[in-house]
Image (cartoon, rainbow, N blue to C red; front, side, top):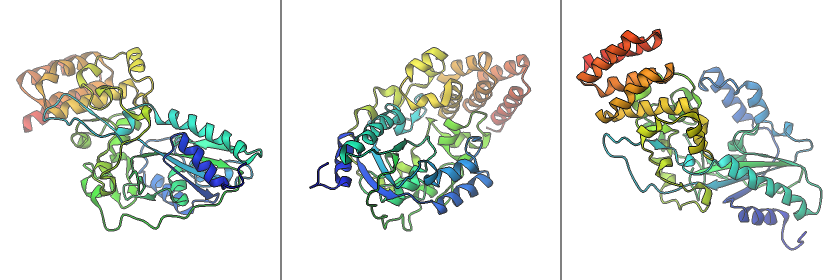
Length: 382
């Protein structure tokens, strides 16, 4: 152990070599405000259909002392994943949009690997046995509350953590440990009177400052929701087929941010930034797994991705999508058929009307028939 340099600074230095951009420390204590807010969201139905997100889970996530015996400190870290957008969609484009964090490799894998190395290094730095656990977003730790408590960032009104240096273009991780570390100070920053993210969310998902109704959130609808996307919200989804960056793109704090230095977060090709939509409808299960092997996009599942692609094609209103959507209407699962029927109704045209009418006569699913009928009515209105 280097006696000339504090343990905290040695940990920061090690974390920097592993690619972590910010490293802060906090003591272990309950996140009372965050637990209360999360439970209120559950009881109001704002979490949507997430059976794993229970009040018991919320209680554990906001009481980190339950996660490790003799826990004393939490190390909060983040990695920037920001990559500049070089291309933009044109009107009636047959390309889709993917949230930036999914342009590169799955951040869970990247961060967990390096957090485990950082955890193992604590014993080397202190020359003492150190116990700990690592968390990256998907574990029983409220990483956002930890980040705020440690001074790594502050809560934005869109519920994302904002940092002074990297904005909200960061992924978060935590290490809870029995090592006693000097805590950092909570930041005295907030969003002030700015409501840009609330005002410009196309689905109205941010129902108030710091309150997100997941049932309206494009990220939830295109990733977590496994069923039918509500008809009244499909147009607002636009071209997004996995996640959404709108509330981050419009945030003033996110202007003039430097690009990430993590190679794994850079996209391998335009397949992960502005992918061509029509080829995605032809993927089989094996091709889907191979194409998105190291990508977060796997979370949507193949059926979910094709559902999202149908919605994006409907919003494109490009007649070139009609043959592919027609094929979906006859060959795919009920869920995909429903969204293909909607998409065809959005594109419209005489041939499309005939396609929908023929499909209605041959369809055995009442739900698909209902969607076809609604799509035909949409065309009558137009």
